[in-house]
Structure formats: structure tokens, C-alpha cells
Image 1 (cartoon, helix red, strand yellow):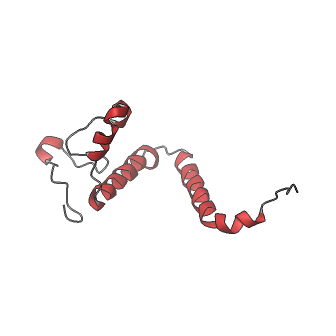
Image 2 (cartoon, rainbow, N blue to C red):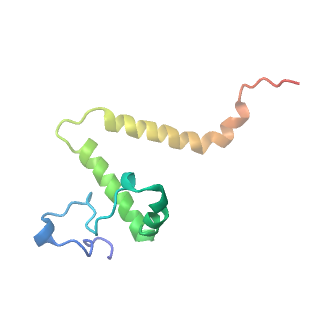
Image 3 (cartoon, rainbow, N blue to C red):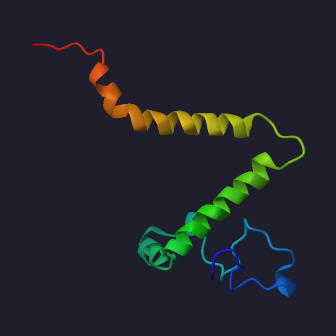
Length: 108
């Protein structure tokens, strides 16, 4: 699949309009239904190539968009999620600078 093209398993006659939040490949067992002994074989069936990982991130982004950002009446939830995500991201970036300013009692 080249950049900007439909997935090879997408057929407009079968699937209808293209939905970027849907996986058009062969369906597999959901992670919640995988038993502990089958976990390694389930992980081995994942597409861990650059295209597979970016496709999964893209589908997750579009699912989030369809659920939170694109309804007619958008609530405050997506804005709070973005704010909290940015707070966590910038905290992890600045943790190395902030850890030296802890208020800790040293017991000798």
C-alpha cells in the first residue's frame, strides 16, 4: 500500500464507503478474549511493520475523532483529554529538571 491509497483488502462493492477507523483485513480474536497461553501466538500475528503500526495509530485517531470530535454536539471531554495528555507529555519532558527541586526530608 502506497501513501494515500486504500488498503489492499478494501473492496468498495463489499464494504461500501471507506471508513478510516475500520480495519479491512481478516478479523482476528479480540485481545480481551485471548487466553494467557495463546498470547504469544496472538502477538506473533500482529503486523509490526512501520505501515502496520502507523495504520493502527491512524485507525485509533479516527475512532477517537468519530467518537469525541465529530458529533454534532461535542462536549468538553475531548478538550479535557487533550489538555491532560499535554500536561502528562510536558511533565515527562521536564521531569529531569524538576526532580532536583523535591522537598524531601533527609534523615541522617
